[in-house]
Image 1 (spheres, rainbow, N blue to C red):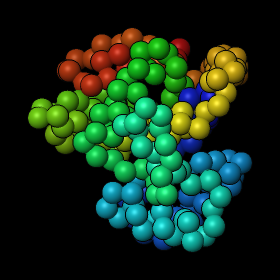
Image 2: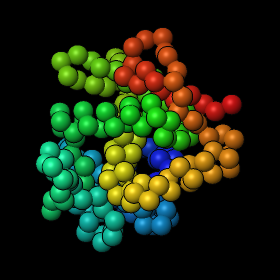
Image 3: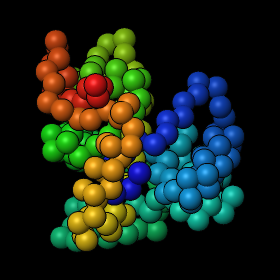
Image 4: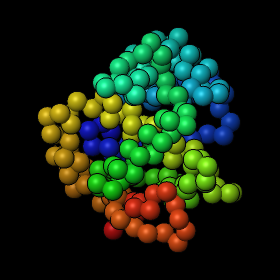
Length: 193
């Protein structure tokens, strides 16, 4: 959720085609009050994003130039992961986790975060035999949500986050927690008691 960095949903499928994914994203976007949708447009995601646009969904993430004094919008839609932007995603996510600014509700995401590491040669991802799709989707959602979070300018985000903690005892709160191997998220979240 924008402003609280609270994970409110997770959707995963191994068998959906790109057109059906666009329809499902549209349905979920409307369910969550026209939530912003940021499709990763690398590879086949560009087709999903194009179809979502053709469906007329009103809140598709608009790409920003991040390497200028002031981030500026482009005419492109969707998130493009590259060497530079992946480092941005990771840096921002680690910062938010270190400052206890996120609420994670997914055991699957937490499991993937525990195996997301620096692979060497400026490459990051899941250790051999593990997946990182949820981590990448979460980092994209976290970053793109922050791009449009105007609450942070009026300092109301902390009040909303505190309410989220009080309302649900199952909330996952990011805390400093070491793991057995050397994951990228060494200051990762753990399940709330």
